[in-house]
Length: 246
Image (cartoon, rainbow, N blue to C red; front, side):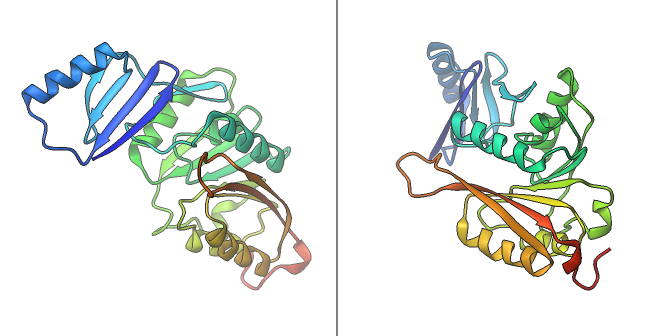
């Protein structure tokens, strides 16, 4: 059995997977536990058993209720450092593509100053991000779309007029997507990674395609672990375009 506990603005958001099949007795007991311990939401195998109040997360000016067990950064301070690094890297770009966008960790803060096109493979995460954007005030347009970027990566011509791309893939990296990015003329690529090995593999494709690595910032947000998170900024050298670039 796996227990995921996330600290939300409304209190603990608890998700249980790998447990026994739920029955009426267990359902009642779980509801009592949620009430007793002020649990905002308690889910069992992705089924919401108790919802006292929406377990909101703040992403910039937006409040988002991610799906039960949905991916979030490990710590608030780590997330803040990552968002700050990504914001610094995109600079004054006015049109940004966010790949593997999750529930809007980067897309929604970036929408304060830029139009954002966010792509994510999980439908529930896309819906949560879109709802958060619609309820927020003072943000520029965020267009969120469900898309499996492993099977259907964005092609070079889909990055037309884009000022920056932010990409935050899972630990496996994003080899197929990075390959198409390497053939594009995007001015700035911002890579976020929790796996230095797959980051190095994917970064090599960008360098081969004419991108230069400007800087890397390491964020040590995984307590009691040797794992790290990093943000890297790449810029396109237009004098080193590879064949097939637009």
